[in-house]
Length: 366
Ligand code: GDP
Image 1: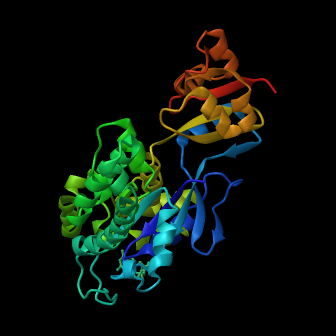
Image 2: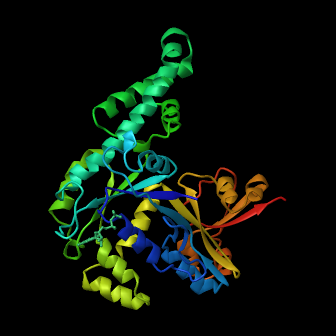
């Protein structure tokens, strides 16, 4: 399953955010949030289209797609040297697909800041530096392995690897994250990807603000925005504490009312899940029928057989064709039969690149 890791210094609001996510009432009663381990939760990806399709199909089940969230506590200054939970923490990050980096952007004299004052940009740099040190270790040990081959022999692969590594080394030594480095060729990109560097993972900065700044942000958020400009990363403003209280309310209407009271249309949690999904370059295709209306996750750019494989490997192996209905057509014609009658269902082959919101029906040999 796809996994997002929540990182940040102590007392910035990581567990508050995690609780908020874990309390977020699941869209479907059939798939409630569940906690696998104390710090791992599965959360459903909110998708209005599922509800709309369910109104048409009245299926027995509605199944949203999910993302796993891991609260990775324990990163402190010196973690790369094994301080605190140091290395265990870093190993946990390595397994995630994306990072949610929580930054404290709220004042509260009662809540101690590990470094004595509220300064999200400094905090971000502390965490980044720990991750960069670890990446530099990885890069240096790889360089030691390929350097000789690259410089003496005619080993093309070693040469490419060496160049990629040197580019990373230079950036990391300047205090830049791996994700700021770009490559020209597909081969370089592949080598780069296979290093699984911590600072190469997509990141979403979550600015944790107080209630009053939930909508407009504050000076801390502005400082973060300025600091990450070069990274081309997304920033999300969330008031985790108040939202964790709102998330505990029983009904949707109650939660909506309280959200509106603090000026929000949609909960930060919902926005966060959606952003994380986008961050991971993920899209959703749907299946719809009387038994089940369901959302499935795939990587942007995947072709029909690969998407069929998300449902079952047999679907991919025996793929014959896909019948595709565009979501908007499904809604405007009001049923699958009506869509077919209007000639709006298309039949696609192996090369079809599935689009977000496609309603798919796969035909396959067994
Ligand atoms: P963690 O160490 O990063 O997991 O931080 P916690 O989530 O445990 O939060 C540390 C403390 O800050 C807790 O007492 C929270 O209630 C409090 N806290 C979290 N978010 C906010 C916020 O937006 N405003 C205020 N005033 N307190 C917050």
